[in-house]
Length: 112
Length: 110
Image 1 (cartoon, each protein chain N blue to C red):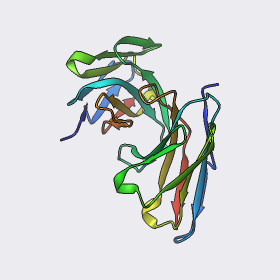
Image 2: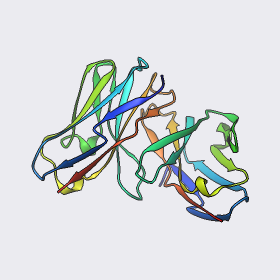
Image 3: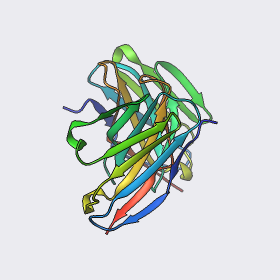
């Protein structure tokens, strides 16, 4: 099974409220990634886990948090959603950092 | 400058025509992937192609690492091929992220 699952598929959030997105994979991949995709823009890497080590991009460091309680699951947490967080959030996983990345179907977040 | 140059930005074809999409990379790369972006934004991986040529149905991907380029060929295009195609490189600099091109918007007309 090479699928990456994401929940929920659609999320509506109010400004200032927290948001928690979930990703799972059963491929025993070491690395899991979170990307943000806005219309007419390329996906932007937010952070990734290599095993238990979290790496966050410098420009999104304070905006997003994540946890990986086990190899299969990874969450993306927004403490206080702003309008600018409205986007598609894509989770991906790979065997290691140079291997093919498998993407989930995404979670469309709308912040009102 | 941009590390991944994707061309053309948009392409309009008549059904049955062939399409050739290109990606050029300004830095060394380990591998690259081609994606189809669904209208709602999710990505479908078409090819993981570190080098050489791969074919899947009417789609063919060719990557020449030494020349830092990759192409996606769609033969006998169909209306359902319409959408956005993205290439992404996995840089050899030690970076962990995929670096995406800006995409090609393909429209296939009946």
